[in-house]
Length: 141
Image 1 (cartoon, one colour):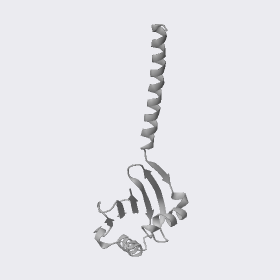
Image 2 (spheres, helix red, strand yellow):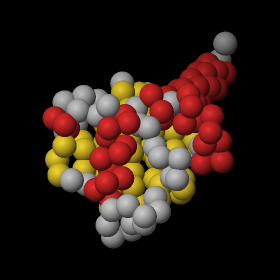
Image 3 (cartoon, rainbow, N blue to C red):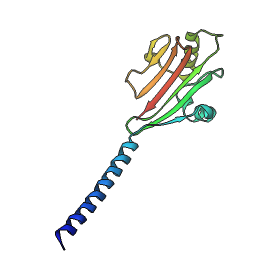
């Protein structure tokens, strides 16, 4: 074999290996990305299968946004943003959710926030007065 043919063969092999490595690296990086699913329009099923295991939301809750997030590093988590009618004060609504959900008073940060603060994977119930929305969030590895 001539030297030129050997060099061409090595070049073709090197290019094929390089393309394969780039493809494998791209798949690896893509697999690390979070997968976010909008569950707002499947609320009844999502609530029954997932959310209600952590939080018992009042029937009056108007769901603004419900997301399921899956990540190879963070495991599974969900976040639900909702609105409640003004017939009760936010503190009363929070207390109702806490009572029905059997949330420990040890997680109470203030009257409008319950948070595990890294004592567990993720667990939060909060009222945001700026938006007039409530949020619940939970997750695990």
